[in-house]
Amino acid sequence: MISIDLSSSEPLFNQLIQQVKSAIEQNLLMPGDQLPSIRQLASELDINSKTVAKAYSLLERDKVIESKGYRGSFVHRHALQNVQVDISERLNNELAKDIARYRAIGATDSEIRIAFNHAISNDKR
Image 1 (cartoon, rainbow, N blue to C red):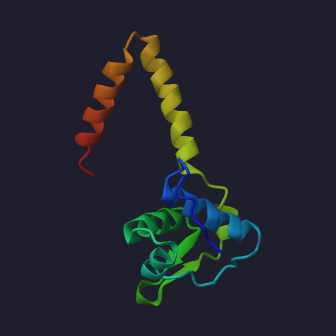
Image 2 (cartoon, helix red, strand yellow):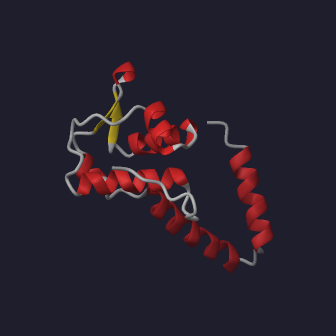
Image 3 (cartoon, rainbow, N blue to C red):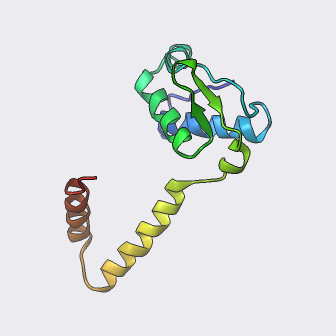
């Protein structure tokens, strides 16, 4: 059901996320359905298991799938509502607004990058 285009500029983990979400929207995956294990899917797609783990982690964060420990990963009961959540798009929109504000006060792109990298590296959550 899932295929990866290795020649695409789209990151592999993002391709996985979009395909799982699409399968849910098309009712090919239903709430409670079990997904292949990380290792199994990585082997089938011939990609690094860390790539699959990252996709699964982000899908779990968005409550599209849920992990049940050693039993595996399953489609979340509210997956259909949650597939529309796109934190990346929201983040891009918010950052674009912030960058526009910084440019309006005269900050250069270089200064913005330096400040952003400094803020990220000093975040000790």
